[in-house]
Image (cartoon, one colour):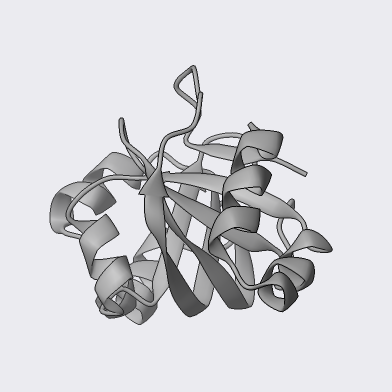
Amino acid sequence: MYNEIKEELIKQLPKDEFANLENKTWHLGIFTEPVLSYMMEGKKTIESRFSKNKIAPYNKIDKNDIVLIKRSGGEVIGYLTIKTILFFDLNTTSISSIKEKYNEYLCVDEAFWEQKKESNYATLIIINKVNKLKPFKINKKGMQTWIILK
């Protein structure tokens, strides 16, 4: 998958922009509507990942990394750069305190919080900038919603 994406980015991006990205760690995030559109429009400024176990991106992402944005069941449509990242152990920080402080920036509904109430860990990625790409397909198989590519 990494090589597929790399070839496409080489085609689409100016050389200096690609050179800047090439030295970073790349993640592939899978996104669903409506939050995907909110993020691409700049309305959603924090991406979150909640989990029961310590799985990526929890403690596996850095503010210098990039996240490639893939539509669930669809194409890669952009990438984001990161302003900062917050990690929470939900055994010591309440999910309600995260909801209270960040809900507006996450652009999620009550059903989201209901689904996440059994989570033990949370990663909040404060988005610096979303960069749109000409959509392209990749050969991704499986149900993972977060993959560290390199």
